[in-house]
Every structure is written in C-alpha cells, then in structure tokens.
Image (cartoon, rainbow, N blue to C red):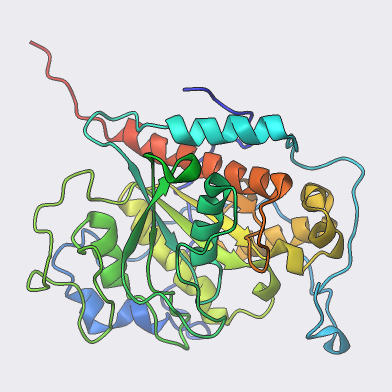
Length: 362
C-alpha cells in the first residue's frame, strides 16, 4: 500500500480528562442517566461507574472569545491572524491529492477477518457529519455530490443508522472504508442519540437502517438485531465532529456529554479522533484560500477550544472544509479532506493491530 505524506503523530488517545459525576454545578446530561441506559444488557461499563483518574491535556491555548455582539451573524466570524510558518505541514499539490486518493483506494485492514474499516461519526446536530461523508465521496467522484442527506443546523435530518461505502474513482469498486452516520448527539438540553444506542452501534448489535428513538432503544427484540456480531459488524474507530463556528456557543452540558461518552468508548478499546468543520466560517482568508488553514491563528485557537470541549489533545483534531454550495471540487479542499481520511484510517488500523486473533503455538 502506497503511503501518502502524513504530518500527524500518534499518542495515547484513550485518556479523557477526569469526570466529576457528583458536581452539582454541572449535572450530567440526560442521555447518560436515563433508566434505558442503565438497563443496557450488552454494556460492559455501568453508567454509574466513576471515571478513571486519567488526565489528558490539550495542547491548544485556552483563549477567550474574539467575537462581540455587533459581530454576530457575520461570516466569517473571526479575523485572520496569520503565522509565517504553518503549524502543520501539508503538500497542497495535485500529486499529493493523487497519492492520498491511491492510499484510500488501496487501503485494507491489517486484520484478515475484516474487509473494511467501519468508522462511526458522532456529533451535535448540524456539526457536519453527513456533509463530511458527501464531501469525501465527492473527491472520488470528481464533482460535488450529496450522497448523505443533509439537514439544517437546528434539526437532525439523519434519524437512522446509515453505512456509506466510500467508492473509488468514478463510483467504481468500494474502498476499504465505510463511514457510518447516525442521529445527532443530545447536549443535556436537547434529546439526541442515547448512550445505550451508541454502544449498541459500536458493538455491532444495531441493524443497518435502524431508526433511533429514545422511547424504543435497541434491544434483542428489535427487528434485525444482531445477537452475535462479528468483528466486521462492529465499529473500529469513532470520529467526533464539531462545528468551529459554534465552539463558543455550545451548551455547557455538551462538554460533559463528550467526556463521559469518550470514557465509555475508551473502555471498549476504540481509538477516537475529531474533525473541526466549517473552519472557512471563522477565518476569512481560509474561506478564500484553504491552504491558509494551518497559518491561521484563530483556527489554531479554536482547535484548542475544541480540545477543551472534547477532552482530547489537539493532535487528534483535524480541521476540514466540507463542500456545501460548490458544484465543482477543488484540489486544495480535496487534499484537506483526504488528509483527514488518512488520519482516521491510521487510528482504525491501530484497533485492528490491537485486536488481531491470537495464533496458538503448536
């Protein structure tokens, strides 16, 4: 498999910041304490179990908001603070795009029992999960296509579990990557995908096309329920998706949601990364020229805020610009999207390396 140039390092992904369940000032979000979650017959982690005293620092600066009341409603939301030297190295060339496309097209899991890496995207309503899936497929189609249906910023269009096989150039054979879309997360104030159902999806019990509703969680009686999921049925990497333009306005409960959710996912042995979407909406120069993304001070600061929100190091967070109003693809946007896919596949493959069947010595 030909490897494209990558500038992202590895580290301890499963080390979320400590979670204080008993703090009265920050009550846990409803989706983590509902009786439906506690009754999860397949979960190996009790929602009542205190979090491990692990500490995960985020290397981004803790910055204050740069917006004012009179600036609200304007796009881009922030000014451009330029750095002469990019803080991540990316080759913005047609050759790099081709190399990354070949890498994704030829990718195969390092585990013989699995033919494709299944990646679950999780994030608040309107964060850009479905748009990212459509944008990645657009790169290979060489034109902008909306494969995953997209809703508004306030309502979740996705209500059911949908798995999208990313296909090679011109819709040819599927690659070794499957991106899974689901209902948006709740934030403690609004209803969303429950912990019970998230764990059911990750473990491979939730059937394809299952429509999520808090009143009817995934159970053994659910039509199509997978009683004994294989490794191929399970999720191999989780990607959190957050909107850069909303980092400063997300409800406080969302941070608790992310941190507690990460703790449960970590206990299942899955690696987690994150996408910071809509970066073109917070930086005017990046909106004009996406190659400025790693020279933008405000994007770097926002990544620090995203790291604090998620409870993870910014080395696992990739800024992306999804296709939205465009009709034609752009080489630089393609490179940024494919770099994110490369980052995701690296961590998916770590899962396969950790879960290879052990060979008995004769």
